[in-house]
Image (cartoon, rainbow, N blue to C red; front, side):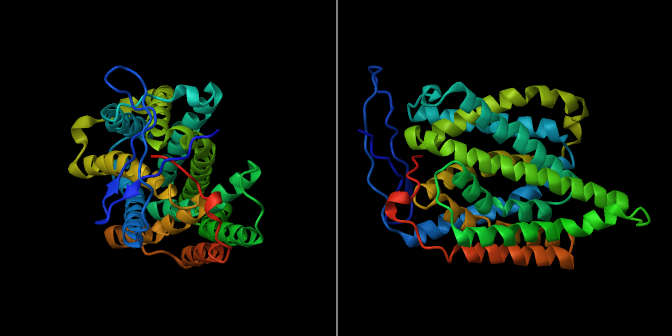
Length: 352
């Protein structure tokens, strides 16, 4: 007999109340089972959660860009995830929860850690360094489509014609974003061919990053259903930072601590405390209530925040093809809402 999944609760005033984990340790050292009240229907609270995730995700590429101006990418990734592991560990200890290594085979832990930290972060940070924060925001808007099709490939979701059309629109949007740089890079007579090739390479790295992140979301789903998001995130981030250490050593010598300004430090703080600690936990709190693909569709409207903020902060006005790509991806997001809503039994019953 399977244990009923535990969901976070939302109080009447909109505050979140995280459930006690099932493996909480009592003073005698024995596990005791606890239960949590079900998630109350509070559209205002859920709307605020989604808005917070959109803002956090929209600002994250710009924070990465600020940090990358003053820190090498591989070292930044290690500092980011290694530092973020500390508050996750402290939260885990405060809740009396152990790391759930027995909840999944060793190969799965290793695969999730490699995807989330070395692969995702090399693609994300180097991709932004070579292109821009707006490129990252738009490419990461492919997440709902990728999560859906990875879930279909894993046998967890049925095939859906609306999502097939959404996938075509989304990838056409991504191609529109990359097309001008690809054409300019292919023309040796173009004065900006070197810059275009650099930007196109950044877009390809961002595609690798978003595929890695989507793969982690799909792979982690059954493990999180068993033991909750907080233990899984703590374990994967800690293991991922450890596996990333050899890569960090490749550019550690380029780190000049004395030259880091408040902008670089602020970017790192946002990437660590806001994006990972706050953002990741809020992400799984939302997934505890919504189907993964639908939640990601709302959240990944964050690329519009990135584009507008980068335009305002750096004065980098998006070009015509870029705007066409944004429009196609928005159309893909709208297309998914035409799908029939899943039944309650098909929702992701994730625990925090």
